[in-house]
Image 1 (cartoon, rainbow, N blue to C red):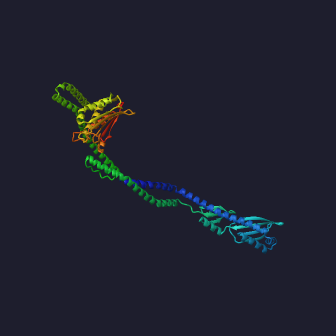
Image 2 (cartoon, rainbow, N blue to C red):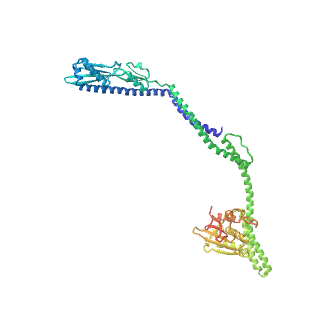
Image 3 (tube, one colour):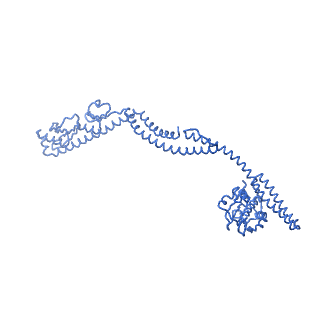
Length: 517
């Protein structure tokens, strides 16, 4: 099963399962729910019947009261009722019944004799109200009735939407009914159909069938949308892993799995295998490159001491040919230079063998710069380069590895001299400035009057083997070595354009020495 299909199925189940749970619970309690619904129907029918019955009682009460007041104030009808004959008293009772909506009106004397009677029908059950009327020398009793006949039952049935009847026997009303006491032992019965568990279950199933398709369609739509959003990046990642594994370990064909997760897992496993093989190849290549780099760096560093040795030998040869009397003095000076540079070569070989960290000791930065310039004195003179050293702000003592920092300064100066070779301008200038700021950082800046750095050279100048003088024998390691020496001392080195258009290289080192770690 694909991941997309699993997502869709999960969302569909997430939509339908809760609905099914909500449905099952009422289905299991359908009998209790049916009884509750029947009880609620009976209570509603009883409330409605009671309201209608109270309305009839209110009409009777108001009618009887108004009829009694009307009779007491009737100067013509009251004598007819008191003196008779009955033919004159009955119209008075009829008028009161018709005027106030009464079905039966009876007027009796204080002794109990009936003076007038009028009735419009003979209802099985009536509501009764009596009123006493005080007249001069006599007390009359007004008896009023209002029938609960077919019209009332029709009203009850219309309001409750159920069958209604009045009976003195409750068993006549059926097993499911609402009962309201009327009068004289009579009750108003409203038949209420009882709910059954089957009906409740049918209603619930009908509601579920009505909503389930909508929920299913909605879940399908959301599932398709979300699965597409989730699976698309997984497929892209799988394809990418496929490409990487093919590139690093040869062509690989994944198993025809439809499950994106399993396919992605297989792709990553094979990609990791390919990367592991590629890593082994890279490590082997790096070992070879490391040896090559050591050899190149060693060759580059050896060239610096060889130059003064060569110059010293050539100088001895010239003195011997041109001024033999100065040979002893020149021999003493040049052999000292040769021995010094041979010692440098020996230490250099030792350092490359053990890859040392800086051995910091108190030293004078002015002496370091002067030693570096003295090394290239002959070349500076022959190239007619004007050298300016500005060291007024330089400290007298710093804690550096003087030999390593001297090597870095020599590399920078050599790069500056190389850059000015063949320069069209005759005003060749080399300025070395030493200063110290408030933070205790000592800066040695070397600025030349050569062509300066191109944007590409400025960006890559400290990369190993990057050189713009490949044809002239440049190795691209001088400034890279200076960069490493500056970093080992906890400082930095920066290449920029000089104030007069040439190149400027600044070595910034803490005066207190390199960090302990």
